[in-house]
Image (cartoon, rainbow, N blue to C red):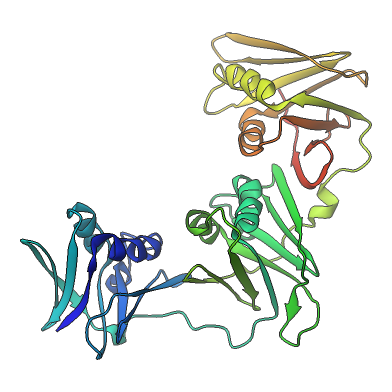
Amino acid sequence: MQLVKTSRDNLLRPLQIVSGIVERRHTLPILANLLIRKSGSNVSFLSTDIEIQITTHAECGVGSDNVATTVAARKLLDILRAMPDGEVALSLNDKRMTVQSGKSRFALQTLAAEEFPTVAEASEFGASVSLPQKTFKHLLAMVHFAMAQQDIRYYLNGMLLVVDGKKVMAVATDGHRLAYCGVELDTEATSSEGAPSRQEVIIPRKTILELQRLLEDNDDPVQVQLAANQVKFTFANIELISKLVEGKFPDFQRVIPKGYKNAFAIDRVKLQQALQRTAILTTDKFKGVRCILDTHVLKISSTNADQEEAQEELELDYSGDALDIGFNVTYLLDVLANLKSEQVQVSLGDSNSSALITVPEDDNFKYVVMPMRI
């Protein structure tokens, strides 16, 4: 029975969308598969790892019958990638799927669609908000690098998303640094009752990275729907459902310092390059750099166990307190690589307090980094 007949690229695109979350090693072998459902000419492709589920559609079905099966995601993707451009046909015969293009032919094992564990969609979503894809992608890009990786404080292994009226905020922290970015929308978020609402959820790290891969830099909308234990994103023929991380995220408003009197603006690229050079002599175990701030000058230095030393000096417009403070250079380079502004503003309290990095004349982004003993 023929399922699909279309060009290779037409089939490759939906498969690439859904295959990103498929893990190579699974306790359940069927999770290495993707679910293909054909209803007339409409074909849906679905993958899940139990935590996240991605669905997309393509108009490439053959015949009017309704069929569902599951097949190994990676194998099918690798086969299609290796094929030359041209027409591809998928057909199902006696629990085997045949992939045919020109004189190439592959027969793959399938598993029954009934055994595939799909994620149950929440019966009710609390808040719902719609924003351009590029705006949401920008929000994620500005904070994702500060998410923790495999921290025992599991609620840090993700991103806090706050929807409050017309404001959407994203926050990530690993306990050593915190990134905050907010955007103001034209329309308010609404609850299921239609009233404006505020809701906070923690979205898992893997979901954030997957969204960054799938979102486009355009003005097409992405709809974000929040439930008590689930979030749903709908955009560009893609539906992504993800479980949420349970737990209480730190109060980010208390972490962001206010009223620092020592501040300076500096060319972002010059600072980034000086830090990259200084970082050469740091080690994998110790990424510390020392920053000495004095009138009109910033000195950055690093040393290592071999008594080697790197020094950089930058001129700047500064007349505040003289400060000697250490930082993990990776945390500084992460934020400078993600910002696109020409200048950054650095605000400091004393040698024991965290630094606040912002963009001049932009209140929508804040980055806090804790000092380090050097």
